[in-house]
Every structure is written in C-alpha cells, then in structure tokens.
Amino acid sequence: MTDENDSARENFVSEMKAGDYARLYREKGLRGGHVILLNGKGSPYYQADLEQASGALAVWRGALQIGGGVTAENAASFLEMGASHVIVTSYVFKSGEIRYDRLDKLVSEVGRDHLVLDLSCRKREGNYYVVTDRWQKYTKQPLDESLIRELGSYCDEFLIHAVNVEGTGTGVDQELLSILSTDSPVPITYAGGIGTMEDIRRIQETGRGRVNFTVGSALDLFGGTLKFEEIVTNF
Image 1 (tube, rainbow, N blue to C red):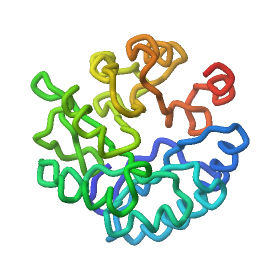
Image 2: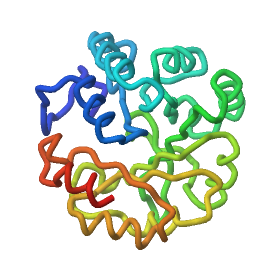
Image 3: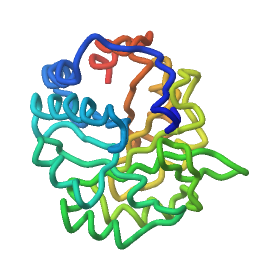
Image 4: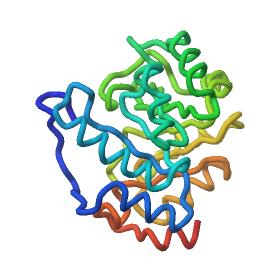
C-alpha cells in the first residue's frame, strides 16, 4: 500500500461485512481478532472504514482489538465502541524515536490493560527495526529483547508482523521468532508468512510455546488455502 491517491493492490475482496466476520469469531470463541482502519482520517474512504469497524465491534463487544490512526485523543472512543484494546504504532514511534510522553498519555487515557503495542518490523543491515506508517517508514529503534522488556510495562500485549514475509504465505521468519521467544512480560502475537499448518507448528516450536499467532490472507476466509475450521479445531 502507498498513501498516494489512496492506492492499494487488492489480493481479495470479501462479500462479507466486518460484522459478519465478528459474528463468526464470536461463534467460535476466537477473542482478540484485529480490526484495522487502513485509510487515514484525511481519506474520503475513512468514514466507510469506520462504519465497518464499528459494526464489527458492536457484534462482539469487548472481544476485538482495533488499530489504525489511534491516538491518545481518540483511543477511548474506540473502547466505547466496544473494542477490548487499541493497537498503536505510529503515534508512539514518531520521527523514528519512541515518544514516551505520548505513551504515558495513552496509558493515562485507556490504561495499559487496554493497550496493544504494534512492534511490526523489517530487517535491514542485519537487524530488525520497528516500522511505522503502514510499514513504509523505518524507525531508529531495533527490535530486541531489551525493547520487549522495556515496553512490556506499558501494555497488555505486543503485536508483531514480520513485514519481510507478511502477506507472502512463503513461510514464517524463524530468526525473528527466536527473538520473540524471550521471556516477555506480556503475551506476544506474531503475524507474517504463514501459509501452511506446518508454519504454525514452526511458530510453536521456534517460539518455545510462548508466541501466539494471527492469520490473515492465508485463510480460506480471505481467499487463501488454509482452512479456517482446521485451524480452529487443531489450535
């Protein structure tokens, strides 16, 4: 995706509404699903995004997480809509640095129990760096065990996309998973590259049973080949 002319290459377009997916997750008892507002506030499509999101949150109040343009000023409003947590990256990682003043303000507004920090990262020059703005901008912040320990006191969970393999279905990033297998103070959810059931088993093995996972485009629900029902049954 790019910000120019609200352009994106579409891999799959669902005929279902976000609320339909939320209803399915509720029926299966799958808490913690992600609702992401991909269009920014300045986009003419933002309101349509928001309507879909609020519809999903209303279906299963207190069970789904929401991200995309979350700030200290609007975070509480998403909880009022029914989100269990708000997911934040770009607001906290500004101009390549961690803005602890903003992080403190977020915690003050919604509480750490309702905050998920998105530490999605890309590898560059041998290290993984947190990326922001739809994963287009590198920060100066490497993702490592010290960062996980440091930020764990501010949030309830980490969400970490392996951006180098995200959306490819070509296999998980095992080097990143080794970093995430550290004894984190809060749960970690990994995403990226999952294309087979074996990939999920690798997450459990390399992550030493400490890393959760989330699946998107690889699911048959979203045009992929992984069977939703098989994952629900086995994991």
